[in-house]
Image (tube, rainbow, N blue to C red; front, side):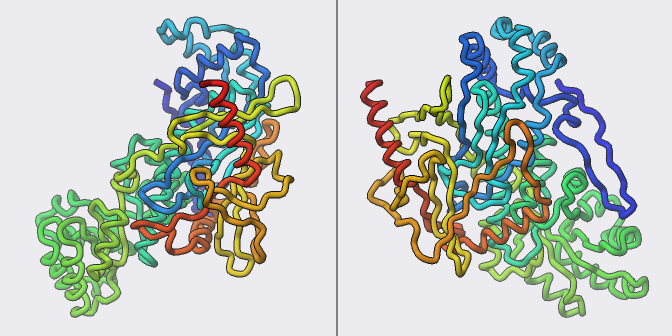
Length: 512
């Protein structure tokens, strides 16, 4: 097990906290061994057979939009950059391999192989879709060009990071969409899959649309607004609810949000109302109440009525209790009087779809010339046939309204050939003309590393979050609805489609 070392926080005079940790400081080493073993065994086999200098292009994508929805929010780039920056096969890494007792590892313990691995990172080229970008199924989220060994060894960690964070960011965006202008708080730390999963979830959820988190470390590390009040144990520790309410108000007079469902929700609201003279006398304010169980629609309507009748119309009603976009939508339809939502388990675990199903495919190799050999994986299932080439995406946007119109997956080496259509790879009869009037193309994958040098200007988390909101505003509402969303047009550039078809026919002929 990796040794965990303390995380240090610098306190700036402005009283803002800045977390300076990376994956390396958390785990006390690089994450170069956080890989499936077959990545390492293939790497050694390539090296042993003289293929170490082969360059390769890999792409990561997902095959189906998550949650039955019409889009996803790309997320994971910033953490993946941390992993690459800390990626290092040093002596301590090799010693860890040496201590592992497994017969399959024995041939790999080769010092010459280690020396080769130590210098791999300097040759990586990475293009990626920035965090917070609206994306769709089958589009490449990242493009890696690197020695074939390095590209392969990054597969598992890339799938782990992008698959999970994209899933959570998308879930959060759906929750925020149905919540409208209501405040949404992420409360998922205790139910997340491990402490590192909790950090990733808080980051992705904030980007996707949540307004705050209860995760203190995530708040400090990423600069996310922090929210939280009291649990049932606090109420239960006093002889009466009134005593508990007073104790909390005296301690945190600027954060007087009270949990009311410990015994009887509406009776607790009435007790708060009866305490109003005491609050006024001490210049305290009943800022809000939180409902955490029961019929949230009924209880919120009745609680709102009690509060309003007693001059507490400014007191907010917050709801929690296994919420997700579907439940919030239903509560809205029932005219629930809820002002803010605390979402936890079903967000950070992506409860209704626990995996995005990302895949990572080799699409081209470069051996002893300047000519890329394009590769694809065949399948009897059409949707599983991979795309060949050096892939990127162009998004066509209405020049007047800024609305998204269609996405075209293209090959960077053949784009200069004139194309007339975007073609659906699963149905060649579905074609959309390109270069229509009043359309502007935007290239989505941008350079991150060039020859091992980090060249990307990383935006702030606030800027990423704002970008998500702007992007979703540019996506047609029919693609954002929860049930049976409109299918946004995504297809292959005509020349790439023809090339892929040719390669499929050749492969079926050669490998039948």
